[in-house]
Image (cartoon, rainbow, N blue to C red):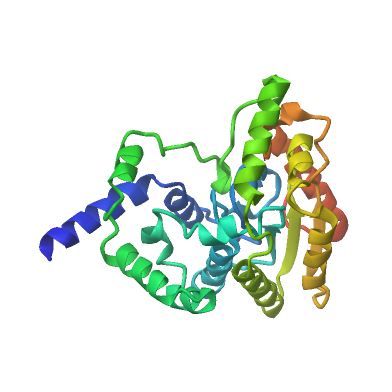
Length: 311
């Protein structure tokens, strides 16, 4: 019993300490001023939005997150922190509802997510109660089991990527410098990972997306749904797996009964500017600055944003 407690403590201390999610938590605790605008989502949000340019905002997205995690994160912030959140942003990309994301089941990070997620609730709604109860027990009491390779990654600096201001995780690189052959190969591979043999509208993803809509309405939060930029090649290959117009018509139908929602579409805004991408579906540091400034200008016409102007 003591050995288990000791190993569990060491794993949570060292691995959690170096993880992106935990360092975001620490940054949130140190923020020191009201947070009115919270950005939720996956790596698209995390690397594409720089809160430096939107006052009183925080990027609380992390790579691989799904709507289940987004919902419980927002619920936690509203119920446990007392933050005066007025606006929340959420991605609605072609892979956002994919079974890839909702069934990935968060891989090796249950030790982090047990703080936020109601595993019993998810297990019931996903009809996988035993699986999620097992994951809860492992995350809560046996976090080190099967995760020693992640200990190596964490302690060897491979997980210590640099977090910038307010949770933002910039990605270096220039997609435009790759050959056309490599661009096509990378885009095709990424799209297949996201959409090939996947449910495009996973029921559990739809369920928790709708819960996000409801909790925002209940708490009088303006919800910004963002379609993030992708390279033209990504969309070309994605159309082989999904009827894009039909997909977004379905998403629009989910939101019809809500008057607190704004939809912003940037999917094709950078088609002619591949130098602003680090790969086929993430912006680089320069691209994130351009997009965030575009977003701020668009929000100014739709919302009353708090705070000062850009420097």
